[in-house]
Length: 99
Image (cartoon, rainbow, N blue to C red; front, side):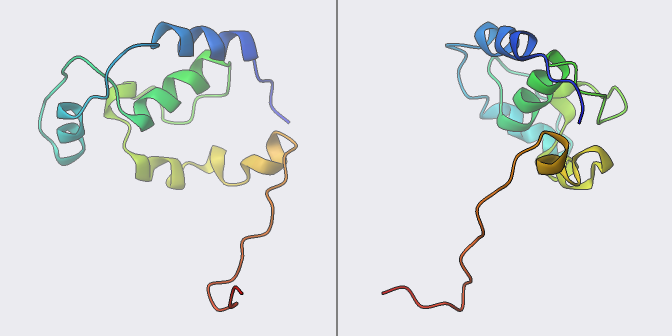
């Protein structure tokens, strides 16, 4: 398991309370240099993880440049549930009918 500094993560979270969603910042993911006021999910998650003391996952790349797909490619996040001691409930099969 890796150390997780909850206070550090919460401090980052609290720094962003009230910050708007960064709609224009989404253009960063297609190569447009746009850094407007606001934040989107993947940079926010990156900042929270960094604030928690989690080992660096993205080679120090600026948080605002982290795209969602990079979380899937990060070797440090391949088995997060085991690293932090969590287990996810089983997903229902798409082929299993629900009544």
